[in-house]
Image (cartoon, rainbow, N blue to C red; front, side):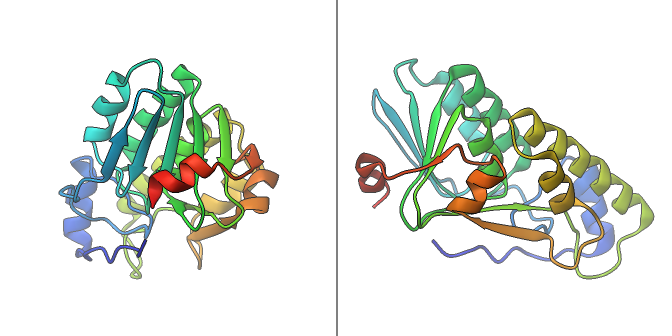
Length: 208
């Protein structure tokens, strides 16, 4: 799945967007909320989320039947607030999450994955956690302080879900030259973002 190319805002517009509650995407740039919805498939046993994390996912996950215990993820990220809410629901329901063959789970998706109790990644899957940024320009001190606060909240959530504290703090620490940290399956298990590496043929087939 190709990565997104978010719109760049000026510093003033970015500050306004943040103050109004705009979330961060995997590229760590502020972007508008009108994302295209993901492709979602649900049976009585599993849920597939293929695409961008949007607010509508929160209601969908909260209303899915209790018989759904497996969630299959392939996503470049999306709205951090929605990802956090979905992650909390995954944890409450005891969900198993799976990132299939050649799939990605970036940014808000990585947070959703972390919320699952059992987190299985295919050997060819890629995950990503990032630090927030506004643009390549130096942000104002106010924007910087807001980003630091948002990153601190994200760090606490990942640690709560069992991800290595030192890894998370280092990954989202500002300023950074490279705000994105890509993880292959073995690295994801080593830092606690995934609980295991495996192949679920049903999950791989669901995302094709």
